Image 1 (cartoon, rainbow, N blue to C red):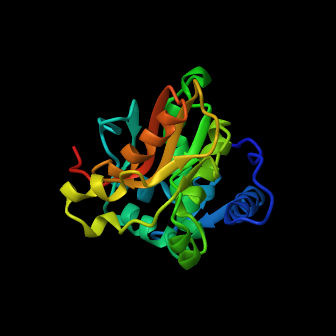
Image 2: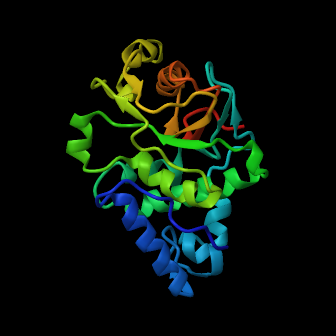
Length: 239
């Protein structure tokens, strides 16, 4: 399955460009090895680097549409467990480009089915930004890496600089669920004119929805009429 060309990016080298290079390499190679079992795979699965058995064994959510306060539509195809959880953790650190690319393509393919008509799709895709302190430490934003294949697959422009995180926040996973909303309240500001726009927030994992809710508040303050959340995984009970 071919994807459209890369979405125009901001000037300067960015890790997302490396994902495009990796995609082009898979187009040139007819076979690959499954990242989970080392089985030889071909065709579209070769680009995923997943054999059909491992692909089927991933923790797919039977109900990927989620209900979150402040979000018009939330979608996550995978439960935050097993291989999917490992990929999310790898994508946050150096050397996680392959994990980010695999998750991004899986998310893109499922979103293409969930949003079959272009008229239903958001006009802007905005990865959750990191604080400057965390970005310096990691060297990349894993949400932006995941967003690159999604933006290409769905032909939705990506606005990596449309929202800024204006203060550093603690790692929400370290906080009790009831404290997470307060921890991220007021942490984001929109820098783009989004009046009347339907936008999608993209993140690697959704748990309570606190981050997405805080970001949605900033987007609506900038005029967004509709806010969707697209996450690769959801840390919820799988049904």
